[in-house]
Amino acid sequence: MITDTFIVALSDPAAADADRFGPKAANQAALAHAGLPTPGGFCLSAQAYNAQIAALGLAKDAEKAVTLEFMEARPFISKVRIGMFDATITDEVLQPLLGAYRALVGDTGMSVAVRSSSLMEDTEGSSFAGQFQTFLGIENETDFLTAVRACWGALWSSRALRYMEGHDISAADTAMAVLVQPLIEAIASGGGISRTAHGGMSVSATWGLGEAIAQGEVVPDRYDLDQHGTIAETVAGRKFHSVRCQHHHTGPAAHAVPQDQVSEPCLSVARVLELAGMMKTAEAMMGGPVEVEWAMDEAGIKMLQARPLHVESAPVPDELWQRHPGIKGHPGGIGWGSGRACVINCECELGRVAPGDVLVTTVAGPALSQILPRVAGIVAELGGSTSHLASLARERGIPMVLGALDATSRIPDGGQVAVDGVTGVVRWQS
Image (cartoon, rainbow, N blue to C red; front, side):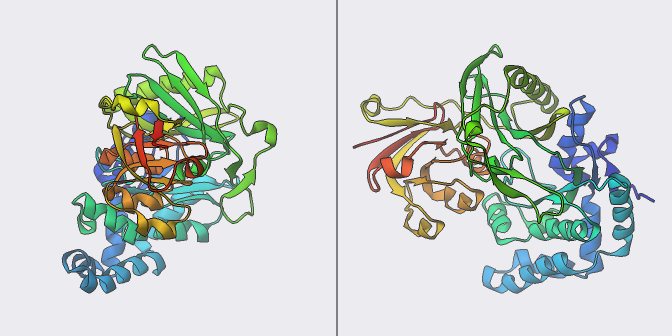
């Protein structure tokens, strides 16, 4: 028996209530209600999270975790997070949750995706991109319940807490809903931006699941459309591996892409134009520019996510920079910045990044979000405009260029570098 307090199918109009299911799940439901194809599934409400907190007697610990000074709060943060991850789910939530899961998968052996949907996630100025948890390829009840508990506990991770502190959000003032959907057996996946700084649109794509783009591990294909919806430029990516889920495999895994497909575009013109139309529908639904995620299986394209997108026009750069060598990549979509280049090849070197530097790196993963407050710009050899770090950089107004080929070897460490986050060009003084 499904309890409406805790679980609602995405097809139900009630699923579009962001106060119960979080903007991520609510937006996914609204996309379906607007006639766009989605994977379907169900939402576990924020009330379930609150019921688990109450059942475990963690309410007072949660309050102390966000009101005490950091050193004093640490044991309470750990207690809440570990409790939410390890403890058995209270029976009032467990029974309807298992009932919904069993009804979804039936006897098909279907794999599912379990995704966080915080009440503060995917709001304007607070995307939380890459800060929480997504689990792909879940195949049994034990792993499913573990994934749900991990989504709850992710609200109390150090990375998420740092992000919330920077956005004046308290973990005690929010809650975690969970989105459960059939896993798309993706041929290709990617993202899209419904409005660029020049008034057009942009689509990114890679083979397999979109995790490789989100984590900044590949250079996706880029399809730029003009203001009239016509494809103005197609730039093939460098997709050396794809992420796929396989039955009886421990989660998503990287697979080498055949050499003849590394630089082969993933999408036909018709598919790009189809996605452009879907983004326009999502934009009308949300009342402004959006950033979307999508996946394509043999049945066609399905929309996975839509969040508000902040777009800025770029200031006019100093013409002197036009004389210097440059690399063209994927634009992050925001502004112009310049500073001392700090070239790093490992996250262990992040301590070298000084305030006002331009970070030059290979992989632009969400783990780099901690340095965003102190950099003037970011240049990365991998990644695309819809990676998690690009979303976080847009929130802070930081110019970023991704997919900049051989940037770490061509840009001199310590030299002056300029980043145009709108045109996607980075230049340096040689």
